[in-house]
Image (cartoon, rainbow, N blue to C red; front, side, top):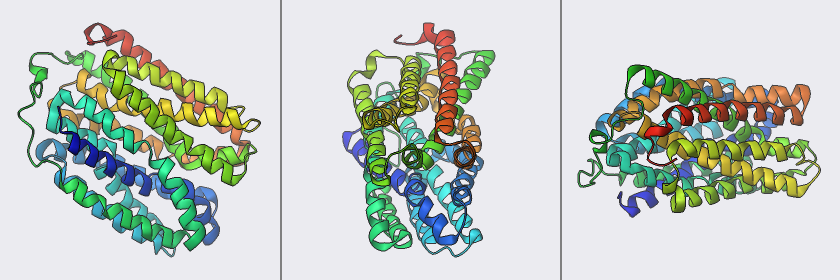
Length: 395
């Protein structure tokens, strides 16, 4: 078992890093666009650039963590994230704005779940599943905590000074990441369990098939999550909710994420990693069915936000744990980095695509696009389970 203190420190760092990077555009995007006189699409292009940087560096960062662990990588990422927030707060044109986002993209790849999961796999091998689930409990509250914080800071001080404060928050994670182990925990009994229990995808053809289905699953979900993270508040407001109510209803996403992840921590050992992907896809499908009616009903909006959070929360765990059982966990960082790279490139388009769809066809069409993406992800999850279920520990 990975030490509880390590899980708490890493989970706290995930909450802060997600809140001060990935989710900041959702609360500051409209203000930035108004201040610069840009279209909302142009303002959101910064996040797209950051995701491209994440894709370009994904394999390299994964290999670094496989070789040296996450202590140095994630600590440097914290410092870089703080500098990027300061750069955004003082940007004066499109070039400096996008340069700051590029810096933030590298910091995100060095600090967010992809790096944290690879670090836990480096420390604990297959025993890392429980720790992966546990750190997402706190990380799932990032939007719940930082959307209201960002809204309050921007209202009181303006978006520029609010981002300076975000940089201070990001810097607080540096000592948390520096406290990570510099060496693997060799006392874990199942650290090298892959020797006794081979990966579910054991032949070359099985690895290719598993990799393709996994890429399809995570790419569809990443595109969806990127678009909704940037536009969820705006979509709910556009469907008829007031701006303030949309912010508070959107924070239920974080509550749903953490509630679902708590369920996984408590009872997830009875569910295989492959089945978990199907459960998560079902939650996302439920969310976007209710989302069609969220403009006419506060209750429907609340169910939409909660179900979306729950489905996305479980999908994050499935995304992190499925490579542990499908492939050799000894090369988790490098392999997951390679498989996740397409999801970064595709999801880089999501904020701009969603903005264009909303401007051209409206918020309901954006929700219909989201439902179509969920169907693709769910199909990949079902095919993964059907092909490799016989080797899974639990059905």
